[in-house]
Amino acid sequence: MIVPNLGNSEEHGRQMDLQTVARLTRLPVRKIRYVLDHRLLPRLRVAGQPDLVGRARILTDLEGFAVACAAILLESGVRKEAVVEFMAGLSDFPVGKRRDDKHPVYAVQKAFEARGTPAEAMLADWTNLRFKFGHQDTGWVQPRTYAPLADMYQPRVVISIDLASLRDAFFADR
Image (cartoon, rainbow, N blue to C red; front, side, top):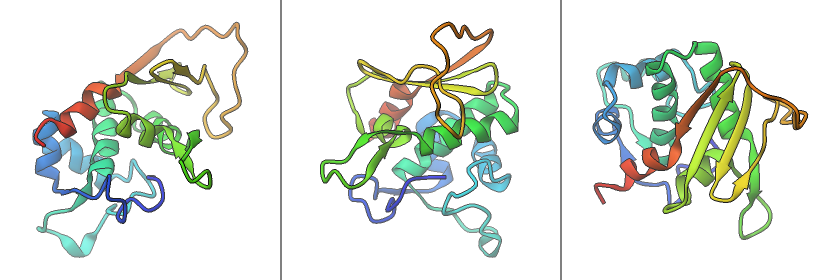
């Protein structure tokens, strides 16, 4: 999971341990640890770390935000497989370009960086995705291919995460 150059980015460079993520988000530490230990964010830089048993795992703000998103889904009863698909979409779906016009901005980055802007991520029928950032709406898309679904698509079940309130929790103690 997680977008390129997070560790080097000044915007996402504040480091935090799992207890800090739990305190900021009011999630149990065991749920945050579960996300990491069970590799629900497969490409996350801190996944596993078996050589660091008993030592604090350190995350950047954005990594902590992504881990918290996955933990919230688990707390809500979403299946592990659906959490993995949802988080892959959140971290891999390009929603724009950076100012340098060379690198894409991914949904998780945009949600985290766009302070003061509403941000929502939705999972429909345990598989399809939709992201809203202020006035930008991706519409329903398929996971992995991000192909738009037909306009007539009406999901039977929708799970929604208010990414703006989660993001605001990460900036509340600054």
